[in-house]
Every structure is written in C-alpha cells, then in structure tokens.
Length: 321
Image: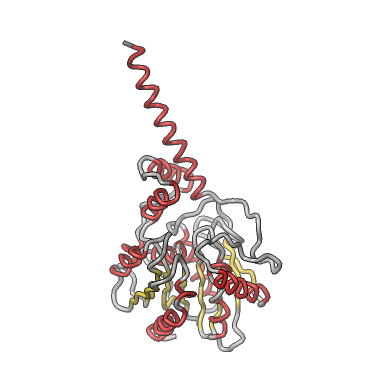
C-alpha cells in the first residue's frame, strides 16, 4: 500500500519541482540583468542587426541616425532612483536658443535609446528640443539587477522629470517612449508627474506586464501560462520586489489629464495593436491614436513618417509648446 501511494507522490513532487525550476529559468531569462557585451554608443560599433522585421533600408537609415547621434556632443548625466540606484542618461542640447522644450526618451525592453530613437534625435534637435536619452534600470549606464517592466521604471521616470525641473525649471517636458518605454510612461500616470510635464507619446506600449509575458510565453516558447508564468512571478516578487500583475497601463491612464499620443502598427508581432486600442479607450480628452497599417513593432515612425509627424505637431499644439 505504501509503495502504491509513494509513486504518485514522487511524480507530483517531480512536477512541482519542474514547474518551479522552469519558472526560475523564465524569471532569470526575462527579468535579470545580462552582461553588457557591446557598447552601441561606441562610434566604431554599428547597431545590432538581429531584428528580422527591419528591411535593409530601415537598418541603414537607423545606422546613419545612430552614427550622427554618436558624433553630436552630449553630456552624461545621472539621477538617483527612489530605491537608491544610480540612473544614467545622455543629454543633447539643440543649437537653437532658447530651447523649445525637453524630450525625455524612454527605450524599450532590453533595448538601447540610441537604437529606439536613432531616427528621432536629429529631427527633435533641429526643431529646437533638447533630448535626454535615459538608460532604464538594469541596462547601460544605469544600475540595477532586475528589469521592472515599467512597474519599477515609472518611479525612475518621475525622478528624471524632477531632475529636469530642478536643472531647467522653465522647460516644458515631453515624455516619449517605445514598447516597455511607452508602458512605463502610461504607468507613471498612476503616480502623477511633476507640473513641468506637458505631453506624452506612447508608442506600442502594452496593457500589463502580465499580459505581455503570458503572450510571449505562448508566442516564443509555445508554452501555456500555467504553471510557468505563476511560478516565475513568485520569483519576481521574491527577488525583484514587485508583481507582474500589480500595475495596469489602462488603469493608470484613467488618471491622466495631459495631452497624449498613442501610436501603434497594426502588423506588430510582439505587442498586439489591440493593446493600444484598450489603452486609448482609457484616455480622456486630449488623447489621439495614430495607427500605422504596415508597421511592425516600434516601426510606425519609419513606415508612416509624415502621418506620425502630423500627429506629433498636433500634440505640440495641444500642449502649447
């Protein structure tokens, strides 16, 4: 009788251990900082070419933009997070004076600002805006062991807004983020931004970290959320100090009163376009949704440049900048 009962218990224990082992591996894969093997700010290093959604024309255009940025003078700046991390960024000042305003550019998940905004910085500088390209925690110049999917980074973004307010008190601020950067900005609306922030641009941001992680499990690994997502989230809570389901972009946007542009490509294979529709429905007056019919993830600006810039200029007008 004991042997009969023991065998199922052994199988159950093995399954539980396997679930926790897989969850821990997923936690390390998705959240833990990785060694920085390449400095893409080095003038001799081209942008990485692993994104199969980019055409050769896109890649060359982004490399030209990145090369231009690397050769433009900038200042390395730092602030401190609410939990004591040193956060770094690069500040680019326009030749035009007086400065029209301050862009804070927020890159996506495991990305680089010089990659995500390679085709944007020169344009904004020529328009008279200063550009602050921040490194999100656990990447680049910034300290940190774990990525927060916007849950932690939203607090960091408020600190950057406060940094600009102290250093440049007269400058209106526009927050502009792509993918996780866009979600970070939307989640920050739940905290409230300093009064120097005048407008928001959120490109292909997701609704919740939980939703995008569950979708990625299925899309990248062909695995169901149960049990791996749930065991992984336990490790996130234990080691990183937050939960993947504790903050919703859509819920935070209900508190927003700033002019906002939400942009997304309908052919996005990573963050589905429907997430931006859901986020947009949570917005009040002063919101606009720009849709690119042909763009994949983060490529709306390249695919529909004129239409995108028309919406950006309209946002500036609504913000009085």
